[in-house]
Length: 68
Image (tube, helix red, strand yellow):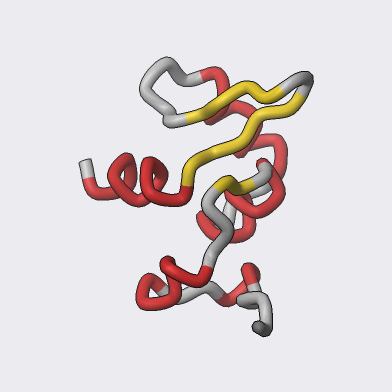
């Protein structure tokens, strides 16, 4: 299965995204810089999960957050 091009993600392709997204993937999806994506991770309402030393974002929780 071909992975989606995260630089040109369309809302109709959400189901093709990985269940857990990296910060770089979040920045590509939202079309923001990496530093802005890291700033989002500090926001209390942002749907992040800490796994070891890295943050991951649930695809479905990100979609809900965007629709709030």
